[in-house]
Every structure is written in structure tokens, then in C-alpha cells.
Length: 621
Image 1 (cartoon, helix red, strand yellow):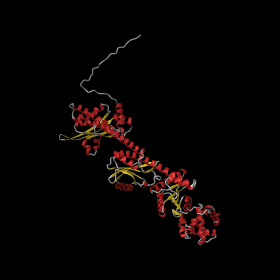
Image 2 (cartoon, one colour):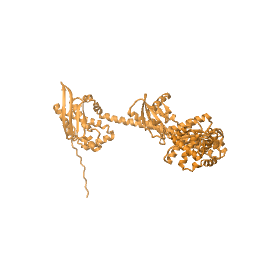
Image 3 (cartoon, one colour):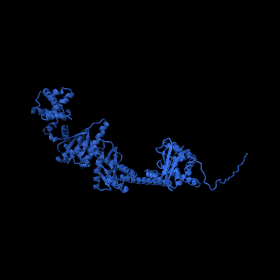
Image 4 (cartoon, one colour):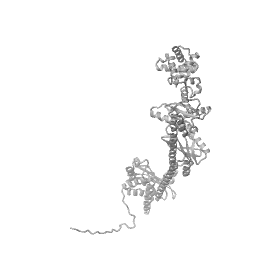
């Protein structure tokens, strides 16, 4: 069986002619609209949007109501009734007081409560409890309705709101100028722009953001190209300044400029001097010993705002990038920091590249120096290799041995600390423009220092010692210096001299082998083992004591003999009381059966004790 259904068309003529149609809409639909507005405009801007939406509804209803012959008093109460009929509220309480000065409206004060606000309910349901009242549409409706009735601008303000967790939605409405007189002009300004302006504002914001992203992308591409092309810091700074048109500065850890653009050198000195006074003391200290002081910072200087960010290389601070502006706008400052952080990252990459190349070259030199010290290759081969790294090992030179002591808790920390010491050493001699060879042996840095006079070597080592003290303030450092040598064949002997001088650097941070005189010559013989045997024989009675007591008496004996028998200085060196020191000296003379104040006895014993120090059997520091 088959059949066919014919399609029929039907046309229904509209029942409402020349009247406005009414659309039914659930509160849920309006709640969804509110949620989507928050997603697209943001919670900060929906108040104005919804206020004007309600305002236009209130204006429309008021115009319709004014077509009737109702009085002002009747129209005032008509507004909340129409509002309730729309379903926006379920009930209301309303009081209004109106004052006239003759025929002129003087004051309007309306107060009331909205019962069952759909707006508060939907906001809580979809967006949660708000921080402030949220009945924006109701406020707009009341403001638009009353403004149209009185033909004067009235603004409603919500005092409490169930959408913000309060017990009820209470409101008050007044003339715009009355709010302004009470310093509440923000109530009007917040809702003063129409919806189209809100949309224009949103568009402008998106347009500005698009421009910013485009400009940032161009800026980043330019910086990347400069890095790939191998540009130095000054070239990078110049190119960055061409884009952002703001003075830029790259400073080292001590806020001394490395490069700058868009500002004079004289002005830089003034700005950096002022900045050093305003920054916390730990900011300019050693990057390895202190945590990052800040991720970004704004300093108010004379005539400038200085936006500053640290330059991070391998999780350590290597300097600071700054951008200078004259005007202070929060949004503008945020954008400046975006450019500045991109710039700082590019600077970090250049510094990392430079650091990698520099460290690789220095370590290659260090490996070569280690071969020289160990004498693993022939002299001619070593001299040839030296030429490739720009050294002539047949020139006069000094050898310095640097010892440092620092408390570390693990092997990993010790390794990292050794790396930092070597890096600080590389940087110091590079800054001083001195070509040296350096290598690390346990906790000693060995330095080959060519082409320096006696006065120059003393000055250089004092500055180097000060540099290490500033970089590592908790570290004890001392230096032993050899005699002046000449030629590669003398390097090993000069190293031995520097080691002896280092061992005898007890009261002074820097000791030269030449200052040891005959003692140095005697201890530099190849018969140190014989000194050891002789010391054990001469000091036999002390060596038979327990280790702790033996070390205590040997240390006392050393300082007593070094001070020429002066009890006062010896007491200070040992941090002992005078009675305690006298007791020890008496005990020593009994054990050794010698008069320690007799020069001949004292000199021989002192030489033996120095031999023990060189042999590292007697520790005095």
C-alpha cells in the first residue's frame, strides 16, 4: 500500500497591529546572557553594560507611563510595579521624598528594597558570591525611569545585595548632583557611558592589545636576529632603542654600566649613583651568595622612573637591564616591563654565549698549564702549544698559589664553589687585562703571572685578594708567591716555592718566598723528610702525647717562638689568659728540657716547626 501526503501552507496574519510586541524570556536566559557577557567583556565591565541596558528599558517604560494622565506621585510608584511585572523582581518596598523650591525640583530621595531580584539569584547561581552588589539592570531601570519622569538625571545606588551575600537588596536613588556633592561622583561616572561606547572601548582595548602583541613580536624578532648575527651588548642596546624609543641601560652586578642608548654617559653616572643609594644593599652583592632580590622593580629618580629587571644566566644574576620613562601610568608601565623582560632575556643569551666562549678558552689554557706543571710533554712541544694561546713561556714570570677555605655541606656544593672561584678569577684578570694561566688543584688556584715587576705583582695580588673577599665574604683566602722565574724549565721549581710560602702564610694573607730568607732556602731542599725525622726526635716528648694535646702544645710553641718569647703577643694570637700561657710554656720547657728564651735553642726549634707546617703536619689556621 502506498499513499502521498500533500504539503499544505498556512499563513497567519499578525494579531497585533501598530503596537509593540512583548517577548517572553526566562530569568535563566538572562542569567546565561550575563554569564556570556562576563566571558567576553570581563566582570569589571558588565556593570556599565547592564546598567545601560536597564536604563533604556526604564526610559522606555517611563515614556509610555507619561502618556497617561497619572500624577508624579502615581508615576513614581508605577515604576517598581512595571519592574515587578517584567519578572525582574518579585516584590518591593519603596519610599520617596521629593522637595520643590517653587516650581523648581530641589531634591529627590528614594529608598527601598527589591524582593527576589532575579539578577542577584542568577549571579550567585552562575558566577558565585560577588564582592559588591550586582543588580546592575535593576539600578539602570530605576535610574532611567525616574530620570525620565522628573526630566532630571537621577542615579540609583545599591547599598546591600543578596548577590553579595547580604540579607536583602537595599537601594537609594538621588539626583546626580547630590551624589557629586557627597563625593560619590564615581557612582555616576561608572555608568555614564552608553553601551555603544562600552563596545567601542572593548574594541579599542582589543585593537591596542593586538598592536602591542605585534610590536612585541617585531621586537622579539629583531632581538633574535641580533643574537643570531653575533651582535655585542652595545649593538643590541642600540637596535632595541630604535624600536621602543626609551633610554636603555645594561648594568653589571654593581650597577656600573656595560652599555646604554638614548641617554648621555654623564646622565648615566648620576642615575646609577642615585640608584645605588636606593637599592637594598644585597642587590649589588655577589650573585652566587644571595637570592634574587626582585623580579622587577620601579625606582623614582630625579626626573625619571627607572624600570629595572635582573639578567639571569643559568639561574644566577649577571646584571640588570633598565628602561627610563618620564611619565607614570600603570598600564604603560606594565607594557614597558614586557619589552624590558624580552630585552633582558636577549641580553642573558648574549652573556651566556660570551660566558661559554670565555670559560671554554680559559679552561683550555688551564688544561695546558696543568700539562706544564706535570711536565708531561717535551719542552719544545710545550713552547709550541703555548704560542697557539698567545703565551711565550720563556719570559720572566711569577707563580702564585691561592688557598681558600669555605664551609660547604656536600661534594656538590664544594664542586660548585670551586667553579665560582675559578670564574671570579677569570673575570678579575680579564677585567685587569692581564694574560695569565690558571688551574685548580684541590682547593688551591695556581696562577702563572708573566711580565710583571715586583711592585706590579704585589699590587695585582692585593687587588685580586680584595676581589675574592668581596665576591666571597665568608671565605678565608691566603696566597703564597714564588720568586721571579725565567723560562719554562723554572716553572716547577717556582711552583714549589709558592707552595712553601703559602704554608707559612700564617699571620699575613700574602707571603712571598723571598721574605722567608734562609728559612725558605732550607725548607726548599729535597731533604724535607730529614727535617721530619729530626723534628720527631727533638720533639719526641711532645709527640708521645695524645693528638689533641700535642697539637695544642706545638701551636703554642710556634707562636711563642715566632713572637720572640713575647708573652703578650703570644697570648693574643692564641686567645689565652696569661696564666694559661705561662702554664703551657712551663710545661713545654719541662718536656723539651730546654730554655725556650735562649736564641740558639729557639732558632733550631722554630726551623723544625716551620718544616712541620710546610709538611702540613702542623696546622696553625
